[in-house]
Length: 437
Ligand code: AMP
Ligand code: MG
Image (cartoon, rainbow, N blue to C red; front, side):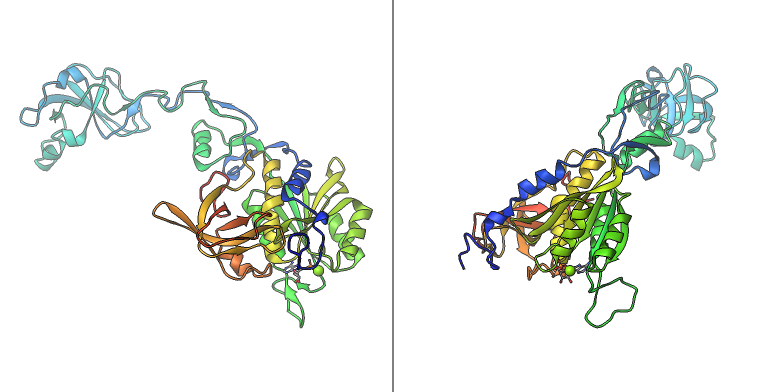
């Protein structure tokens, strides 16, 4: 086999386009979607479509950071545990209530965490630094309190506007909503927010051999797993999957299923794009719009279809990505082309998974000049990453994908990467910001 020019089936490399080329042609067809108003709890992972300015200070009132006594610093400056300063307690103020009085010379107001700081007070003395415990134990009552430690002025007071000053820009358009941002919006009183809407992604499996899980399996048939892997992946990255089901390997049936996907922002089909049976798919797609069939210089996931189908919500056209049928190929192609398209529609800026450098624990072979994506498990040992292939790399072996947390990349121009060499790994189980989801 002439490995530099042909793959094992003898296909010419001239027929194959690069991963980058396919990526830019596909991604070029997608734009950020319109905005929608979403309830706060439903907005997680969506991108802000507006700036948010704070209508008030947070906290709105200076309040206590401790359970303790609101006092005047100059009254207790000399306090020590051997010689406590005794103050008259005028009231207790709890969180959610306003103090009735003010702190004047020689007095204290008992105050709970979060309660507004009364006028006249410049320092909070926590319970632990008073004789409150002893007074309670000896039944002395709390009409007076002994301060045992002077603290420093302003101690344990959360000043008004400390977290968010009034009129400041708290959320910038383009920010992805995380639980803490959702909490900030809630504390500003918002109950819904304007975000970029989630793309609807129709998913169609194709093949006479497929049966839906839950149905009776027949001889020679297999359960459709791709609808589920791709459906779950769409959901995970912020799309709304619409599982259309299985199209049989005949034109009428495929046409019918594709028509049902035309109300989506993207149609993803699985299988029927490899040499064996793509003619039928090609004919159906060609009559419905523009279509390209590509061999991409990658392993797995060489065969891919890409086109724009006529009809649909996007000004009369719906993009279509035809993933290969083998389960691992389908997922790898999803990672490379479908996920970035979803993220772009969602308004995300970082479209690719983070990469790391790791030391290979077993060689990766590349015998036909494609870009090889090897399923690996990456571990961090004493500050260094190691990548171990997860077993047989056949594109039908979904368990090896499930066990992997990354894809190690052997470039097109390398015939192998040896054990001990450094390899670039795309971290699948990290989100685009390099964290676990
Ligand atoms: P094809 O691209 O149609 O030649 O399919 C390639 C391989 O993927 C075949 O072994 C198919 O049986 C398998 N395959 C296709 N679609 C699915 C699916 N939805 N679930 C599981 N395996 C599939
Ligand atoms: Mg098939």
